[in-house]
Image 1 (cartoon, rainbow, N blue to C red):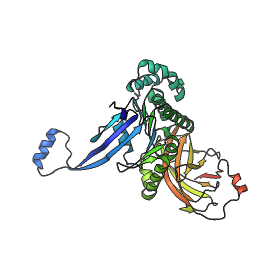
Image 2 (image 1 turned 120 degrees about the vertical axis):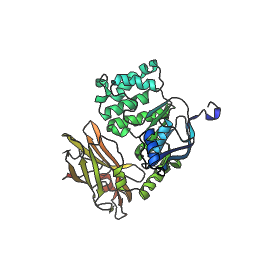
Image 3 (image 1 turned 135 degrees about the horizontal axis):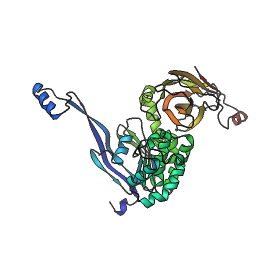
Image 4 (image 1 turned 120 degrees about the horizontal axis):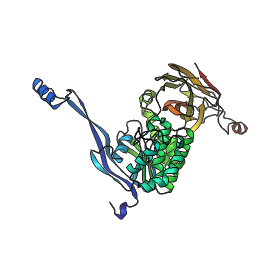
Length: 407
């Protein structure tokens, strides 16, 4: 499409639907078996149900716009990206993409595990439609940003998940793509990489490129996007300003989600250890009292090194207001079949309202092991008196995180 009306649009989605047929009943492994079973049981029929992953989804994204796609697990976000990237075909509707499209959907998507990092850069560039001269011109910047120069001629199958995602993101961000589609894979990287990737994506929109970001992190969405599309049961429930959209998303989660659902979903990380419980001691605290959170971690694969454990306290707008990290208190722990612990947030005083807990496990400087988002909730009650102004100055810097104990 080349009309003037659509020249400023990077993505056009019109009446998009995607349905999957779920079958149960007779299991026919071959045509011959189907015929035999048909004679034996002529009245037995398999039962089919239809699951609508997407239903009549329509939206446009302008050139240079950064749009966050948010929603609970199963809302249709990943299906939407798979249709946009032509991994799967829609049942009805159409998608019109203007310009070159780069995507980062899962760690190492589009990488060949037997090829080296150097070879995969050229391979990914070719997949994205880049000429050899373009790839060569961006090669040094890609390697520098990814920080894998020492392993450039090592097969990717020997990379850690963090190294793989750094290289995959660097290729997609540095080669000339007009549209970049990103699923929530950046959480695999360390804090330094996440900060640099956020800055890089911000610079892409300033250069006129379009970014569509799927994320559960309201902090990411609020800092990178000016607009949000909220998905719910395969439909768009909101499309508008980012702050209003994230607030509506949090309201949906607050009204309809549970910790058991959050714990059951597939989460980023290596999975060798996972949080199986994160629970505040009580549902509500006063502003001044310590907020005590109990947690349990279970081991699923052997590893003898040390782990880092940390928690983020998130407010109603999706912004982190406190960070409790075992390294801050000089604590560390090694793998156990089952680990129980607690942390107590004593300061800063939190204003009245609802707060949520994001929990993280990691190996030092290596990889994220588990990331459990919104796995606990508590309220701070409006109890007076509040701190005087001179007391508030005491808490103006980083929060003092006093207790972090393991059993």
